[in-house]
Length: 260
Image 1 (cartoon, rainbow, N blue to C red):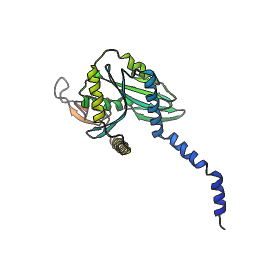
Image 2: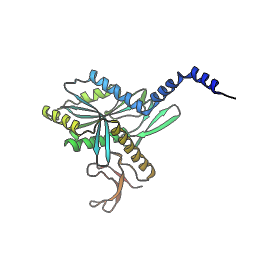
Image 3: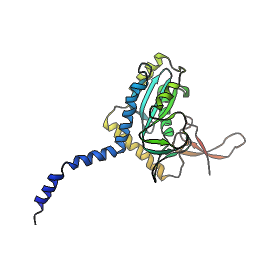
């Protein structure tokens, strides 16, 4: 029995569903959520911040010793360099500055994700090295967009929606000169990797490899930057000889943990 006519008839009647299914899968993907979140912040910057004072650089991928790091938004001003990490999420958000992972809860379903403060810490340290800046000249900003609600108390630099702009504008003490702002903007543009599909693909693979290695290992992540830790020994003071976990990024990062 030849079913070709029946198959062709069914396909002819339902062909329009194919692009709808494809579009729905794209809209639900983490890639689209990330793009949508970044677009929301990019658009709001134009209305909430004075473009004469704050110079926006978007989607910056910078080379690092072990691969690359990708920064959603950088705002350069006389009040410092603001490094913005965007999270497009829904549901209840639980977390604290010291936790390695935070929790997203939607009804009875819970999902763990990397502490965005730790994620952004690496961005800050990369820029610190590239630009020769200090802690007072760099500001970490986390902004959640989407239908999410904080269920634990968050530090002032973890914001929702337009709250990131209020935090940025709260910094009123100049820490950079006008000429430094121009020079920093130029250095970031010159130091970034080309905004190509290949660059993004290689960065995504780099991140996946790091996550996979951490999941296989019992070695803890640094509570400050999320990097791998190593066992060290106290060399002086009343705790001489005591062993502890120390960040492998020392001296750039001085995160420590007690050995349990």
